[in-house]
Image (cartoon, helix red, strand yellow):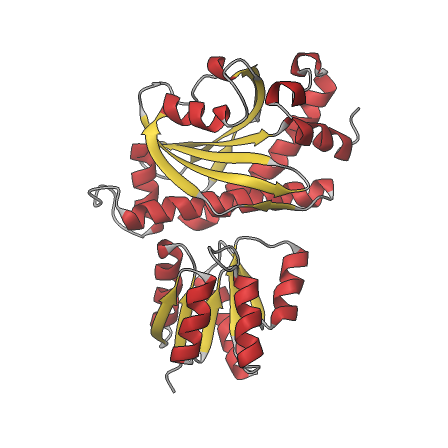
Length: 121
Length: 212
């Protein structure tokens, strides 16, 4: 089965990197978002199987976007991909509804490990 | 509160205090270098941090040629400490780094376009986050970087812009500078990471490492 993914990061470089990792693993990238607001809107319209989400983004941050998405869809599968590895933020992201957290810089294998565990759960 | 009134007497900082700041910076730089190493797939060496106390107008650029074009990624530091971090690369180094990050052959990139700029911006984001996370753990403080902003300009202009936000040209500022070198490549890829704490934050840093 080909899973669909929405990639959310304000950096076009990071969106490209994450999308390439997922595409090489057989995912279909159905959308990209560079702000938290876009992430919420695109999740609503695209209903992806998986979301990757940065924390620091313009307009609404990634954790708030996770919270908003999970409020509408408690089954949303969201993996945080962020350079900020502060424990408090990791806890806040998980409490908001994220299912896993990948710290930048990351290896492709770590991203795939996280998404596969999240999708299998 | 005017910048001049807020500044401590930097000239009276003791060697023990400077050593403490240097050690804190070394910890942060080590983590930042490790992060860069993972991003480019090469070993990254770092220098012993250099501390400069000078008036804004006397601050010297890190690169040899003041008119040399550089890329600079600026992040505001927020949380228990405030100030800013600045990641500076000579422009030709930034182009080569972008090639490494994008897995392109050396010399294959033309203009320093949107994707290349985004790559360097993300390097600044990741390195600053690694640096501040290390400081956060070491000092028991919450430190969060802002989103990064990239500029491409002459070295002197970049330094002036970053430092002038503290106050006037006559105001003293503290600059903690770490030089790093990406080894294992044909080119010499040299960059600089600057920690520019606000005056009140410097005092808080010293308290956190218990240096009076």
